Image 1 (tube, rainbow, N blue to C red):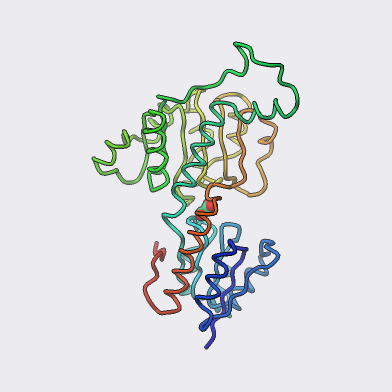
Image 2 (cartoon, rainbow, N blue to C red):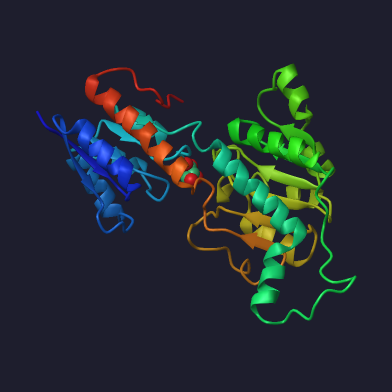
Amino acid sequence: MMQNIIVTRRWPGAVEQELRALVADQAEVTFNEDDEPFSREEMAQALTQADIVCPTVTDQLDAEMLRQSDLRTRLLANFGVGYNHIDMAAAHAAGVAVTNTPGVLTDATAEIALTLLLSCARRTGEGERLVRAGQWQGWHPTHMLSTQVTGKTLGIVGMGRIGQALAQKAHLGLGMRIIYHSRSELDASLAESLGATRVGLTELLKRSDFVSLHCPSTRDTRNLIDAQALAQMSENAFLINTARGDVVDESALVEALSERRIAGAGLDVYAAEPQLAAGLIELENVVLLPHMGSGTPETRVAMGHCAIANVKAFLQGSPLPDEIRA
Ligand code: DGY
């Protein structure tokens, strides 16, 4: 019997075609032609119509939807590595397998973390706004002084693939000292090559010139960087977030930034995307990007390949390469 596959957002053309071609004799694929995010009702309906749904970070798949009595979906092949938008317990209870796209976003996301780190330290957003506003009066010795990055201490929260890739780029490229806070310890030779030392969160917050977040959003990490954590950071330190917005208490961050209790922040992710926390946009000492960490053609195509590999395995009844079991 033909299976139904619903893809909730447009993918790069090459991978859309590849998915269609690969499953042609087994499944019909429906892409979201106008690329508008599904409403809650549309998402719930897709789960009753498709055997396989390929959602992404902009979709919310909550317990109520996954408990529908006429649920048809058996695989959620997520286009993306983060899966905090899927109620995993409800999916598993309903017998729905969930896969993601690990590994392929590593360098692109670490590049954006490094971009944000350099941008907020060197005030490139402010500088560009000044030039574009036609207000630049020319070079002078005390103009737009900013924070030098080379040789400073970078604290990485969550030392998975992306944290490690950032550590490597920052240590080898910029001579940064790396300290990290993570559930598991790096093996000794890797830690040595990254110049990385494991420390507790409080020590990391106190010692870091830059704190970069690379942990997933879970019950344990929600608001991990709250007012109290921000108060432990130096007033000369910067916070970088390319993980998930809700790892940071955004109103506490706006307060810390506006009162200059920390030097600045670089953000690619927000708790209620695309909405920004009140007051954030007015601040000069924050660099704001539109969740573009994985946004290179190479990476988005590779994410598509991963999702397709999981769909293919599911249709063949083979083990799913990237099944999330937790
Ligand atoms: C992911 O895959 O989780 C990213 O946030 C999307 O870029």
